Image (cartoon, rainbow, N blue to C red):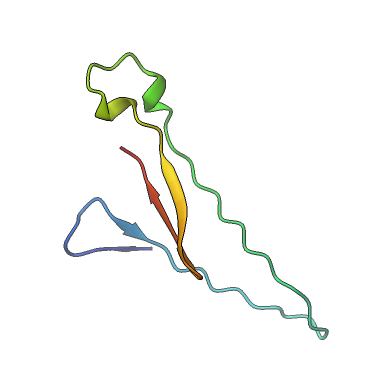
Length: 67
């Protein structure tokens, strides 16, 4: 995990995985992330009520945002 120098709230993760078997096989990486359910709280700001977003940015990059 690494922090971006320009944005103190941005986290970057790099996942490296290897197939250590003698036989070739597909390898599926399924990252899981936890977001606090703050959008269901009784908050006054509309920005605080937005749900997290996650989308594929590039072939090897997922971008997530929690407000």
